[in-house]
Amino acid sequence: MARFEPCHGKNACRDNGERCLTCGRESSEIARLRACVEELANLALEHGYDNSEEFAAYVARKLFKTIAHRREQLQ
Image (cartoon, rainbow, N blue to C red; front, side, top):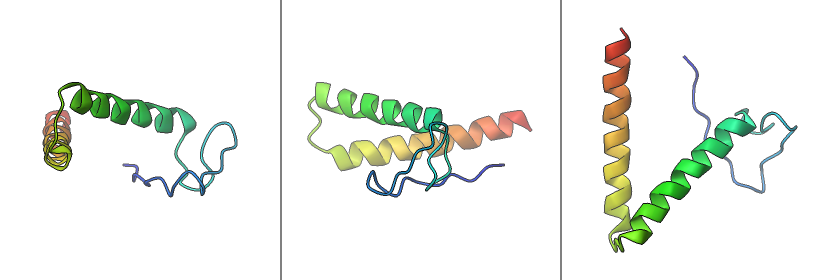
């Protein structure tokens, strides 16, 4: 199983056209994750949530549970 390496910041990002040479993730993976984060931010803004920390914590909890459930299903 692969290990996620978080972004070290745009100033640290070095790209060879296929992957970031700093974190090692593929450019397509980075772009897809950025798009997902952008969609979540848009959802919070569209609904006028003023408790963004609670929204983010909820999303993190749900994501963790969903991943765990799907891993169980695969075994």
